[in-house]
Length: 74
Image (cartoon, rainbow, N blue to C red):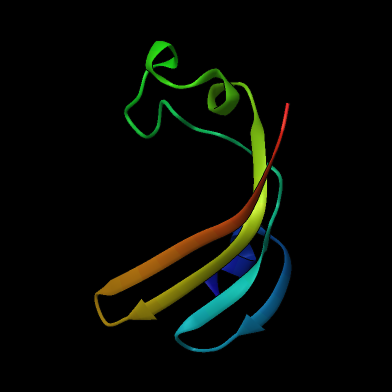
């Protein structure tokens, strides 16, 4: 599956044709990619990296991603 090949997961706990569940790798918070500026982004978000649990669900032409148990690191 594409998500596994992209290396976004540290650990995959469940994978099927329409869902993937796992723990993400540590990543930098991309507030600029979300269209925000550093001045308008809270400092506890702008200067940290995050990691957490993710559930990605797929349907024909649609998808849903849930990010939970978020842990941040300076």
